[in-house]
Amino acid sequence: MAWEQGTTKNRSVTIPTSVLRLALESLLMEIIGNLHKSADAAALLIESALRDVSMLRDHPSPAHDALKLGIWTKKNLIPAAEVERLRPIWGRWFNML
Image (tube, rainbow, N blue to C red; front, side, top):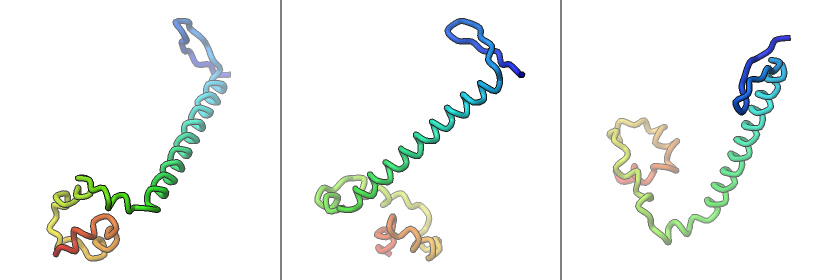
């Protein structure tokens, strides 16, 4: 059996490699599970927020115009297919042409 040397609270310990590997796999699975839960919660939050966007119209924010100066490429050089694909995000800035 292979062994790994490590320390815990200023004490030297020796742990079988198989036990260490299982502990690390378990920790990794817990981290991945938490990431999935966070992603699911974020998706639900975004979905809920997008159900009623009237509040965004009623309460203007400087963030609403963030892309006004953020598109540096000459608009006529951006392929039409790309403009259409991203129309929900930047469409109003291309409608100004």
